[in-house]
Image (cartoon, rainbow, N blue to C red; front, side):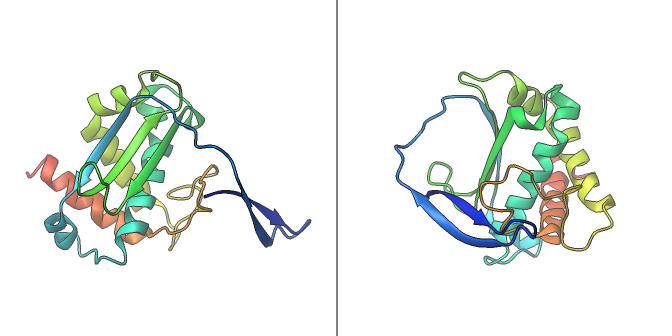
Length: 168
């Protein structure tokens, strides 16, 4: 659904969502992604209800950190995360170039995948907030209003993914 929010002047409180009837937009670009099997979710102690918040928070944190590895701005990239993607049949996190045909940012993320995901996990772990903030898992450009986000589950998810990348 495409929509916009109406907010109260001053407080910013949401007073309504207004649906828009717009044609679908498609962006053919390049992406880097990783999938998470059910067994890995179980190892990370992430139940089905927590999966959307865990992958969404991990996606946001990865987008926030990628500019350190790909020399871009976070506004040059986007992301999508889903508990069950139809093409992978698994929980999947995508980070994509925000330019038609791609601009090489996702590819640089792929080439530095381990260090990038470790830095992502480290930012989440080092942030002193409890539930997530703009310094770790919230995004200023989230189309879902930063919902759902599960910072502790994102950290456990990345711990489990990184353990598979480097089991030592």
